[in-house]
Length: 262
Image (cartoon, rainbow, N blue to C red; front, side, top):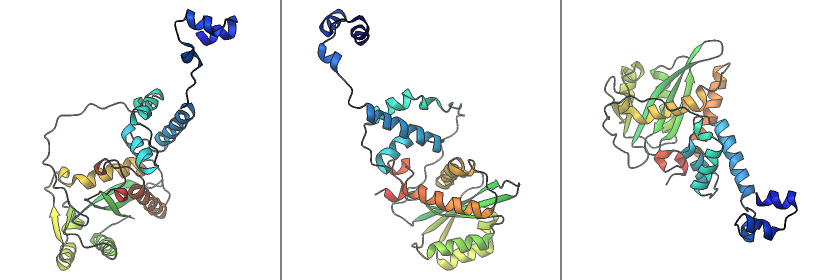
């Protein structure tokens, strides 16, 4: 109001400040953070457009830990709310369920690898599968193998390729799918000296790490894109796996990507 009065009514600054009970210092103050606030807003908008499944926590950890910006979280959250980005997703009503027993946390890499399959389809309707493997310690993604038919032989081949550059895990955690209970796979694990930890049927929470990883992949890229061929799926999966390990913040790692976590 004081600014409008001085500009339009040709009143002196002193008289305007006296009339509106403000100091001349307050009147002459100009924000020094407007440019930075604009930059924060642009980064937040770009992030939420690209990563539609990210909330404020993921966005802030990405800016802080991956990109190295040291802005205060309260300031970033204020701009996040001013942009109404906190209203993008309507919260769903959740059912009350019994709390599952917590999984035992690995204390170092290559203690337990978790494995599971995902399903989707190409533009022409052909269904394909994704075989996912992660290291439970830092939730590091180890492999994503795409195929129309992923039998136990393909599973063994993927694991053999991983063992060429990774230490042998103590155990493999998986469900009771036919690929994992086949005699060929069981014989391979026994020959390698690797224990197979099967979860109880109907209890996917016992394989919670890979289930959460599957959900991240599902909302991060699988459900976002339509692919014409299996080769396109594999190429995109390889690129996304690098992004997941090197740049995507993970709450289990204190907001840092798996390969940046100590």
